[in-house]
Length: 301
Length: 243
Image (cartoon, rainbow over the protein chains, first blue to last red):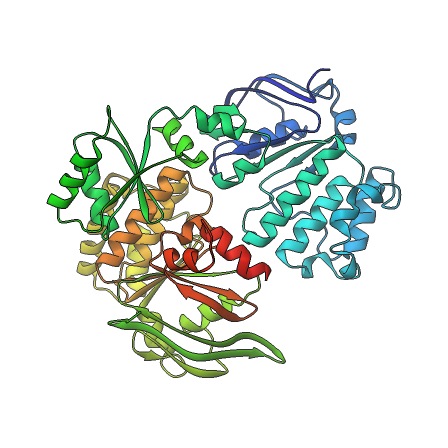
């Protein structure tokens, strides 16, 4: 069976700016696929092309076997899209928004209630409330319900968790994981590296280019240098001193530690002596497993 | 923990809106040069408390001083002694970098000479002297964020408030931003940060976590992780906020 979403060599320029540079990937039915990258990386441009809102400069995209240029109308029928900005009608109620979006696709909330029940039931007690009066977490759930109400085959979510607190974010990812079991293909973007581990596969995106596409585990296993976490009482001087250390390749702050890679093999004893000679106390050095964020930075360097 | 030189002191800070208690007896102290994380879910009451600390709103009751000034009676003095930066930067997109510094320096009452000195110093630190005459809207997001922070400390305030400062930038730029925060704290400026992102909390010296208007935990990230048997601040937060 061909993949649900097939993207081949998509590029897009805005004037002189290259927003997307020869991007290729495939997403399978029932897969939760994440695009991880900072603002300005090209995530929204890519999603606007996939949702037939923007033409690519060059390249091909097929969604469920249909061409995004020729078959854009048919694609819109099978696509659910949640833009980064809250784009429901603020002065319609929760219930009216859902009915409106179902109506656009010539269906009713009742016909597809089973698909959204898990999510919509959480906001149903507030169904008479205007959408503009909902909290951030509730708006997000309503927007997802509206994007799903016509039972799309492909769901595209542009930074759904940006600006949402940790509890709501966690619930949102749990919903997506239940949802994909219905066979829907889900493409989701996020600037937050720690959300990568919640996807089946991820693409790391930076400055219009894909740095890596794989399962989170495989991306981490490609990190070839041993990674060290170093700590001392004075983190800020520690960072400066580690950057002066002869063998240092990279040194980055990570919370209360500094993540260090070195040229060749690290002699922990030498490093400890060096740091003590610089006046550091409570020095700790330990080897650790890299995170997706370590991998992202490694690919940027 | 003993706080040597307290800069923010809140004792039983209460803020009510009608029958709703947004801040329920908050008691905490933040020291000079400390990096303090102020965490909580949406609607936990962080913004309300922060507005009070910035002199924009008065508490219903409780004793609160910021930089030695009383939040009920000395709000103008507070405003002069703090800096503020949010993710929605407050810089002017159609002014140049230099004009933005000049504008904010002027607002805080710095002399022309002082503005010049401080702008050179801050831009020098960022390595952005060459960009001085560029219009802000042509500048990459990561630089803007660093410039917004520099502008927020142009008057060398006692405290700088950062409201979700680093959203959306790449991980390397984000770390450069935190290096600036550490450098600022070393100069004795207290840094008060709110964020939804728990990995950000790991950079703070101490963090407080608010749930439903109350501070339910306040300690160093290491101690909190120990107390709540968690490997990350995210886990600590979920345990507390989910109840």
